[in-house]
Image 1: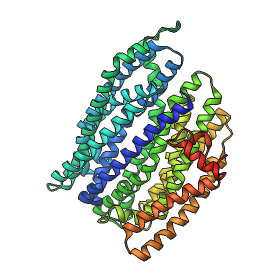
Image 2 (image 1 turned 135 degrees about the horizontal axis):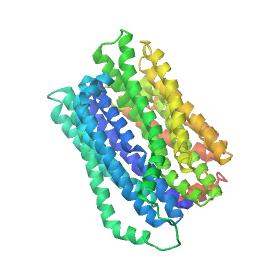
Image 3 (image 1 turned 180 degrees about the vertical axis):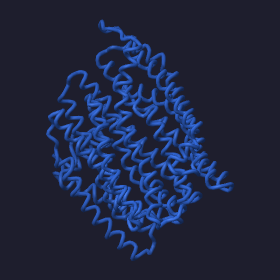
Image 4 (image 1 turned 60 degrees about the horizontal axis):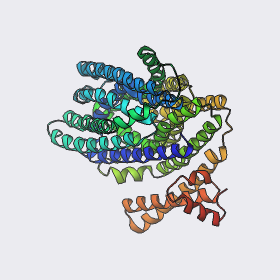
Length: 533
C-alpha cells in the first residue's frame, strides 16, 4: 500500500470513527438525562464486562486477519488469502458463541464479582452481541487486509446509528419500570446496532465476492499452499498477543469498576447510591469525552497495521519509516490540542452537555492529559504489530496495569480524591506503556523521530490555543452571561488559533497536505506567507 493510499484509507476510517464517536457521545446525552449518574454506573458496569468478553473473543482478529492477508497479498499468495478468511470465520464464530453462552448463563455470578448486582439485566442483554461482533470482525479484518477500509467504516456508522436510536427508545420504554431495566434498555441497542452492521458488511461481501475471487485467483508464481492447521496456528499466534494487549487495557476498566466500589466503600464517606453515581461520572463523562479525540489514532492504528505489514513483507524499510513518521505526527497534532482544550474548559463542557447532571469536571481537568498518551499508545501499538513485534504492546500494557493497581488502592480511598484516583492511575498506566512502546519502536526500526514536528510544535501551538480559549470564554461570558454561547464560541476560536499558530511555527508538512482535500490550495496559501517547508 502506497503512502498516499495509506493516508486515504486512514482518513476514511478516521472520519467514520469520529462520526461513530460523535453519535455515541450524542446518544449518551439523552441517555444520561434519563438514567442519571447512578443509572450510568449500572449501564457502564455491565458494558465494561461485555467489552472484556468481546476483547477476549474477537478484539485481536481484525488486526490479525488484516496483517496476515496484507502480507499474503504483498507476496501474491492469493489462495492462502482465501483460506485465511475461511479459517478465521470458523475460529471467530466458534469462540464468539462460547463466550456469549458463558456470559449469559453466568450473568448473576459476574454481577457479584464486579460488585454491581443491578447490572444483571444489562449483562443478559449484551451477551448475544459478543457472537455477532465476533463474526463481523472477520469481515472487517478481511477487507482491511485487501486494502480498503470503506466496508469497515460504513458498517461502523450503520452500527452506531441503529445503536443510538434503539438505545434511547428502549431506555425510554423501560426506565419507568426500574432503573436497572432502563440501563438494560440502553445496552440493548448495542446488539441491534451490531446486527445491522453485520448485515450490511455481509451484503457488501456477497456483492463483491465474485470480483474478489477473480482478483485472488490471478496466477502469478508458484508458492506453497498452506494447510488449514498451519493457517489456524498462524491466526492464533498473531491474534493472541493482540488480544492480550487489548484485554489488559480492558481489564483496567474492570479494575477501576471493582476498586472504585470497594475503596470508596472502605472510606466510609459515601453510600451505595453515591458510589454508583461517582462511577457513572467516571465512565459516562470522563471516559466518553476523552476517548472521542482518540478515535483518530484508533483509525490510524487500524490502517497503519496492514499498510506497514505489507511494506515489511516487501522489505521496504524506507517506506515503513515514512509511514511511522506520518502516523506519529498526525496523532500528536490532533491529540495534544484536544487534551489542553478539554482540560481548560472541563466544567464548561460538562455544563453545556449535561445541564441536569454537570458534575465531574475535576475528572476531566485531572485526566485530560491521558488523551495524549492513550493516543500515542494506540498508534505505536498498531505500528509495532505491523512490524511483527506482536508481544511487546501486551507486555508493556501489563506493566502499566500493574502500576495502576496500587495507585488506585491508595488514592480512591481518600474521600477528597475519590474517583480522581482512578483517572490519575489510568494516566500513569498509559504514560508507562507509551514510553516502553516508543523505546521498543526506536530500537526495532532505527528511526530518528522528528520531535519538533511530532511533539514540540503541536505543544507550543496548543498552549497558545489554551490561553486564547480561556480568555475568549471569559470575555464572551462577560458579555453574554451564557455558558452555551461562550463555550461554543471559545471552542471555535481555539481551533482557529491552533491552526494559525501551528502554521506560523511551521508545524505543517507539505507531503501530508498534498493528500488532503484542497491540499494544493492550502499549500499555495502557506507558500505565499512562507509558512511551510
